[in-house]
Length: 180
Image (cartoon, rainbow, N blue to C red; front, side):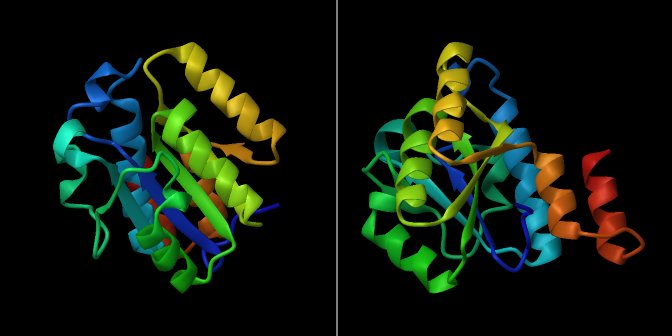
């Protein structure tokens, strides 16, 4: 199944100032999320950004602050975004059938969000190179479990080029510059 920009919503999960530095690669999720947020903006794909208990874990990392979607962050205490009533309302209002997920930690909030969205009938695409956990083992195990449960594991370039669909457009030039 191909991603389409008309059916997609980008979900950025918990890339926060006190949590991100302990990831196995602390640049991975912020870098990938920034590219995805910029690409979504270029292509008109809506995005939602969640924060897990920001009083304790901190705000979204500085490098994503200027890219924050409108009316975000959505603050939550549940591990799964899909269990949070505010997120549920905002996601349902978008009327999208594909969720493209990036963020941290892969084996906690990303995993639980992906599984709950799958159970709700949403096609889930987890961006491998824009997610991270404290250990590589947890990251890999979570991706394997998501795949086994019916989710799709993709890369940020797969997402951007599937949303784009063709070359020779102004958006193609912008996306090409973005990933250089």
